[in-house]
Image (cartoon, rainbow, N blue to C red; front, side):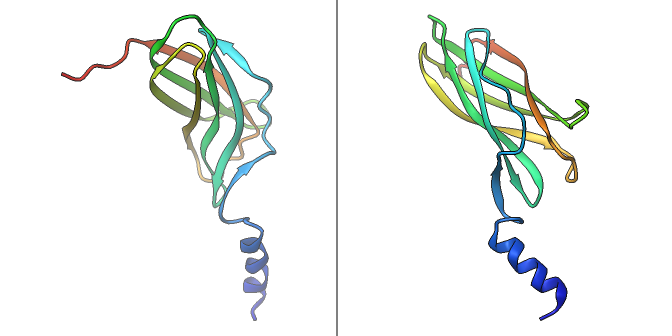
Length: 129
């Protein structure tokens, strides 16, 4: 067995090249903005690339919300922005919990060390005629 194959097999067995949720990124605690409490649980990686930010959002306000968009900044260890992640939902009732995956736009080789909620955007629910 060649040396490169011997090194690759343990990586595959340990999930090093597959999908995983990274526990190594700093998220901070829950953040509340616009009556929405957002908690980041992790980042989803595949082949070393960050694909998404996953977490929960809860409407802690008294009113139902229509269109909801979460925007996250993905930062390196120096605090430099290296990408964004966004998630959208059409409606979140008062008290309702939403489990989201926010799709990321990050260069393949970039290392994400921190995720920061940039903003919560609220709007009327979209109506199709």
